[in-house]
Image (cartoon, rainbow, N blue to C red; front, side, top):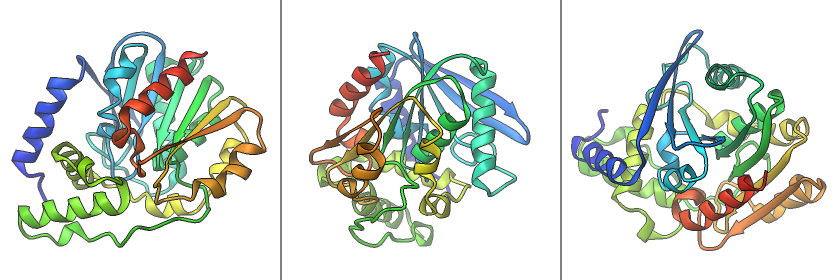
Amino acid sequence: MEIPQFMHHQTQQWIEAHLPPMGRHMVYTQPGEVCWRQFGTGEPLVLIHGGHGSWMHWARNIEALAERFSVWVPDLPGYGDSSTPQFDDFDSLVEITLHSLDQLFGASTAINLAGFSFGGLVSAHIAARRASVKRLALLGPAGHGGPRRPRGKLVNWKLATTQAELLEAMRHNLWVHMLDADMQIDPLAIGIHTQSCIQTRYRSRGHSMKGGLAQALDQYEGDTLFIWGEQEVTATPQALVPALVNAHSHRSFRIIPAAGHWVQYEAASAVNALLLEWFGEV
């Protein structure tokens, strides 16, 4: 299914009106290319999007963060404008993403790193394998292996036969899985989610459900901040804190009131302030 033209146009208009000038870099890796976008100047801060996502998962955060950092945001392999992967295993996705990152910065250049949802799991594995990650922030990370709090059932948007049906399916799925408040399901959220879903060619769900987050983080010695929305549906934050956070002196957490899974979109001001403080301390 193609992205509805009006929706794509609305999203592009918002990006042009609200984000600073963008640099676009296609980084070749065997067996394809990873698309990176760069905003602002300063120390590098890398933001990794979630499953069925794209760099636009960070649309409401880039402007604020780019005032302090050089913000680098990829489309992971199999997402957005990056190449269709010739693999389906998680380790290959992490290695290709890490290889493209090191091509941009060099393996020894220190970076700060934040990941959302499936991108949180990817970020934890990058931090475990890369020596020069100064600080890490994980927003609603996947791979925790703990209890979830589903709000309802997702609908198969691929069965939509009209633009109206597609729009309604995306609106429903945003409410079920991504955002807590109805008012946050605005045209931008729908446009980002629709475009990202249609362009997704890598199946992340199975890897997100397998676990592996704790094991990856055990190999990373840097400071880690967990951020969850109070109404997170992909996890029960209070159940994860004892093992993932409390048992480790270099980890901390915040729970953002009245926000769902896509916490950096729904509570952008609060999350931007947290990230600026967290990464600005180093």
